[in-house]
Amino acid sequence: MREYVDAARPQHPSLIDTEHVLERAFGVVNIPNVIWIDEAGMIVRPAEPGWAGPAEYPEWLANLMAERERQAAEKGEEALAALRAGQDRNSYADAIRDWAAHGDGSRFALTPDEVVAASRPRDRAKSEAAARFELGTDAWRRGDRESAFAHWRETHRLDPDNWTYKRQAWSLVGNEAAGGGELGRLMQFGADDSWPFDGDFNRDTAAIPPGTYYPKTIDI
Image (cartoon, rainbow, N blue to C red):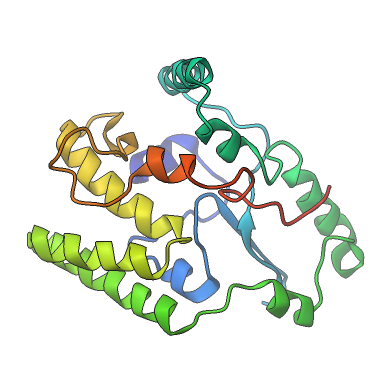
Protein backbone atom coordinates (compact mmCIF):
# COMPACT_ATOMS: atom_id res chain seq x y z
CA MET A 1 0.00 0.00 0.00
CA ARG A 2 2.78 2.45 0.84
CA GLU A 3 4.18 2.25 -2.70
CA TYR A 4 0.84 3.50 -4.09
CA VAL A 5 0.73 6.37 -1.60
CA ASP A 6 4.27 7.38 -2.49
CA ALA A 7 3.53 7.18 -6.23
CA ALA A 8 0.60 9.60 -5.80
CA ARG A 9 2.90 12.14 -4.07
CA PRO A 10 0.17 13.53 -1.79
CA GLN A 11 0.56 16.93 -0.16
CA HIS A 12 -0.89 15.69 3.13
CA PRO A 13 -0.10 12.92 5.64
CA SER A 14 -1.30 9.48 4.48
CA LEU A 15 -1.48 6.91 7.25
CA ILE A 16 -2.08 3.19 6.71
CA ASP A 17 -4.41 1.91 9.42
CA THR A 18 -3.28 -1.71 9.65
CA GLU A 19 -4.93 -2.19 13.05
CA HIS A 20 -8.35 -0.68 12.17
CA VAL A 21 -7.92 1.98 14.85
CA LEU A 22 -10.14 4.45 12.97
CA GLU A 23 -12.88 1.84 12.64
CA ARG A 24 -13.00 1.35 16.39
CA ALA A 25 -12.69 5.04 17.28
CA PHE A 26 -15.02 6.58 14.71
CA GLY A 27 -17.42 3.84 13.62
CA VAL A 28 -16.09 3.27 10.11
CA VAL A 29 -17.99 0.38 8.53
CA ASN A 30 -16.92 0.48 4.87
CA ILE A 31 -14.45 2.06 2.49
CA PRO A 32 -14.31 4.77 1.44
CA ASN A 33 -15.62 6.51 4.57
CA VAL A 34 -15.07 10.17 5.45
CA ILE A 35 -15.08 11.89 8.86
CA TRP A 36 -15.22 15.67 9.05
CA ILE A 37 -13.13 17.14 11.90
CA ASP A 38 -12.65 20.89 12.30
CA GLU A 39 -9.59 22.87 13.42
CA ALA A 40 -10.63 22.55 17.06
CA GLY A 41 -10.72 18.78 16.84
CA MET A 42 -14.53 18.59 16.89
CA ILE A 43 -16.32 16.04 14.72
CA VAL A 44 -18.57 17.91 12.31
CA ARG A 45 -19.88 14.87 10.44
CA PRO A 46 -19.45 11.26 11.63
CA ALA A 47 -18.21 8.45 9.39
CA GLU A 48 -20.15 8.26 6.14
CA PRO A 49 -19.52 7.18 2.53
CA GLY A 50 -17.58 9.85 0.65
CA TRP A 51 -15.29 10.42 -2.32
CA ALA A 52 -12.85 13.09 -3.42
CA GLY A 53 -14.64 13.43 -6.75
CA PRO A 54 -15.29 11.36 -9.88
CA ALA A 55 -13.29 8.16 -9.48
CA GLU A 56 -10.32 7.49 -11.73
CA TYR A 57 -9.00 3.93 -12.00
CA PRO A 58 -5.96 2.32 -13.60
CA GLU A 59 -6.76 1.11 -17.10
CA TRP A 60 -6.62 -2.56 -16.13
CA LEU A 61 -9.06 -2.02 -13.24
CA ALA A 62 -11.39 0.18 -15.29
CA ASN A 63 -11.54 -2.52 -17.96
CA LEU A 64 -12.21 -5.21 -15.38
CA MET A 65 -15.02 -3.20 -13.77
CA ALA A 66 -16.57 -2.46 -17.15
CA GLU A 67 -16.55 -6.14 -18.05
CA ARG A 68 -18.11 -7.11 -14.73
CA GLU A 69 -20.83 -4.52 -15.19
CA ARG A 70 -21.54 -5.79 -18.68
CA GLN A 71 -21.84 -9.37 -17.48
CA ALA A 72 -23.98 -8.39 -14.51
CA ALA A 73 -26.29 -6.32 -16.71
CA GLU A 74 -26.77 -9.28 -19.04
CA LYS A 75 -27.77 -11.46 -16.09
CA GLY A 76 -30.02 -8.81 -14.55
CA GLU A 77 -28.10 -9.04 -11.28
CA GLU A 78 -29.31 -6.87 -8.43
CA ALA A 79 -25.80 -6.35 -7.04
CA LEU A 80 -25.13 -3.49 -9.43
CA ALA A 81 -28.21 -1.59 -8.30
CA ALA A 82 -27.22 -2.14 -4.68
CA LEU A 83 -23.74 -0.72 -5.25
CA ARG A 84 -24.72 2.21 -7.46
CA ALA A 85 -27.56 3.57 -5.32
CA GLY A 86 -27.17 5.66 -2.18
CA GLN A 87 -24.51 8.32 -1.61
CA ASP A 88 -23.61 10.28 -4.74
CA ARG A 89 -19.98 9.74 -5.67
CA ASN A 90 -19.48 12.70 -7.97
CA SER A 91 -20.85 15.56 -5.86
CA TYR A 92 -19.77 14.62 -2.33
CA ALA A 93 -16.60 16.72 -2.57
CA ASP A 94 -18.75 19.80 -3.26
CA ALA A 95 -20.15 19.53 0.26
CA ILE A 96 -16.63 19.50 1.71
CA ARG A 97 -15.72 22.57 -0.34
CA ASP A 98 -18.81 24.35 0.99
CA TRP A 99 -17.79 23.52 4.55
CA ALA A 100 -14.22 24.73 3.90
CA ALA A 101 -15.62 28.03 2.61
CA HIS A 102 -18.33 28.62 5.23
CA GLY A 103 -17.24 26.70 8.31
CA ASP A 104 -19.98 26.29 10.90
CA GLY A 105 -22.26 28.26 8.58
CA SER A 106 -22.21 25.49 5.99
CA ARG A 107 -25.53 23.73 5.65
CA PHE A 108 -23.62 20.45 5.71
CA ALA A 109 -22.00 21.05 9.12
CA LEU A 110 -23.77 19.26 11.98
CA THR A 111 -24.13 20.37 15.59
CA PRO A 112 -22.62 18.13 18.31
CA ASP A 113 -26.08 16.73 19.12
CA GLU A 114 -26.68 15.99 15.45
CA VAL A 115 -23.31 14.25 15.20
CA VAL A 116 -24.19 11.99 18.12
CA ALA A 117 -27.61 11.23 16.63
CA ALA A 118 -26.07 10.36 13.26
CA SER A 119 -23.30 8.21 14.74
CA ARG A 120 -23.42 4.44 14.85
CA PRO A 121 -24.06 3.16 18.39
CA ARG A 122 -22.04 0.19 19.64
CA ASP A 123 -24.10 -2.30 21.59
CA ARG A 124 -22.85 -5.51 23.20
CA ALA A 125 -22.99 -7.49 19.93
CA LYS A 126 -20.96 -4.87 18.03
CA SER A 127 -18.44 -4.67 20.87
CA GLU A 128 -17.99 -8.44 20.81
CA ALA A 129 -17.68 -8.33 17.02
CA ALA A 130 -14.84 -5.80 17.32
CA ALA A 131 -13.03 -8.06 19.79
CA ARG A 132 -13.60 -11.14 17.61
CA PHE A 133 -12.24 -9.30 14.60
CA GLU A 134 -9.01 -8.44 16.44
CA LEU A 135 -8.65 -12.01 17.69
CA GLY A 136 -9.15 -13.32 14.17
CA THR A 137 -6.60 -10.91 12.75
CA ASP A 138 -4.06 -11.92 15.38
CA ALA A 139 -4.68 -15.61 14.67
CA TRP A 140 -4.20 -15.03 10.94
CA ARG A 141 -0.86 -13.33 11.52
CA ARG A 142 0.25 -16.27 13.67
CA GLY A 143 -0.74 -18.73 10.96
CA ASP A 144 -3.66 -20.19 12.93
CA ARG A 145 -6.08 -20.16 10.02
CA GLU A 146 -8.90 -22.17 11.57
CA SER A 147 -9.05 -19.93 14.63
CA ALA A 148 -9.00 -16.86 12.37
CA PHE A 149 -11.88 -18.19 10.28
CA ALA A 150 -13.92 -19.07 13.37
CA HIS A 151 -13.48 -15.60 14.91
CA TRP A 152 -14.24 -13.85 11.62
CA ARG A 153 -17.37 -15.90 10.97
CA GLU A 154 -18.62 -14.91 14.41
CA THR A 155 -17.66 -11.29 13.71
CA HIS A 156 -19.78 -11.30 10.56
CA ARG A 157 -22.72 -12.83 12.41
CA LEU A 158 -22.58 -10.32 15.27
CA ASP A 159 -22.17 -7.21 13.08
CA PRO A 160 -23.49 -8.05 9.61
CA ASP A 161 -23.64 -4.41 8.49
CA ASN A 162 -19.92 -3.80 9.03
CA TRP A 163 -18.38 -4.24 5.59
CA THR A 164 -14.83 -3.53 6.76
CA TYR A 165 -14.89 -6.72 8.81
CA LYS A 166 -16.23 -8.72 5.90
CA ARG A 167 -14.03 -7.27 3.18
CA GLN A 168 -10.86 -7.58 5.27
CA ALA A 169 -11.42 -11.29 5.83
CA TRP A 170 -12.61 -11.97 2.29
CA SER A 171 -9.71 -10.11 0.68
CA LEU A 172 -7.06 -11.84 2.80
CA VAL A 173 -8.37 -15.29 1.91
CA GLY A 174 -9.17 -14.37 -1.70
CA ASN A 175 -5.78 -12.79 -2.27
CA GLU A 176 -4.05 -15.89 -0.94
CA ALA A 177 -6.15 -18.18 -3.13
CA ALA A 178 -5.42 -16.03 -6.20
CA GLY A 179 -1.69 -16.03 -5.52
CA GLY A 180 -1.57 -12.28 -4.95
CA GLY A 181 -0.90 -9.93 -7.85
CA GLU A 182 -2.81 -6.82 -8.90
CA LEU A 183 -6.19 -8.56 -8.79
CA GLY A 184 -5.61 -10.69 -5.70
CA ARG A 185 -7.10 -8.37 -3.12
CA LEU A 186 -10.22 -7.93 -5.28
CA MET A 187 -11.01 -11.65 -5.17
CA GLN A 188 -13.47 -11.28 -2.30
CA PHE A 189 -15.61 -14.28 -3.19
CA GLY A 190 -15.43 -18.04 -2.97
CA ALA A 191 -14.40 -19.92 -6.10
CA ASP A 192 -14.88 -23.40 -4.61
CA ASP A 193 -15.91 -25.33 -1.49
CA SER A 194 -12.74 -24.33 0.35
CA TRP A 195 -14.16 -20.83 0.94
CA PRO A 196 -14.41 -20.60 4.76
CA PHE A 197 -17.23 -18.06 5.07
CA ASP A 198 -21.01 -18.19 4.79
CA GLY A 199 -21.05 -15.18 2.46
CA ASP A 200 -18.83 -13.28 0.05
CA PHE A 201 -18.82 -9.91 -1.70
CA ASN A 202 -20.96 -10.96 -4.66
CA ARG A 203 -23.60 -12.78 -2.65
CA ASP A 204 -23.83 -10.30 0.20
CA THR A 205 -24.12 -7.21 -1.99
CA ALA A 206 -26.73 -8.93 -4.15
CA ALA A 207 -28.81 -9.67 -1.04
CA ILE A 208 -29.11 -6.08 0.28
CA PRO A 209 -31.61 -3.41 -0.86
CA PRO A 210 -30.27 -0.75 -3.25
CA GLY A 211 -28.78 2.20 -1.41
CA THR A 212 -27.71 0.37 1.74
CA TYR A 213 -24.12 -0.51 0.77
CA TYR A 214 -23.22 3.19 0.55
CA PRO A 215 -26.22 4.77 2.35
CA LYS A 216 -27.16 8.31 1.43
CA THR A 217 -26.44 10.65 4.36
CA ILE A 218 -26.15 14.00 2.60
CA ASP A 219 -28.09 15.92 -0.06
CA ILE A 220 -25.88 18.12 -2.20
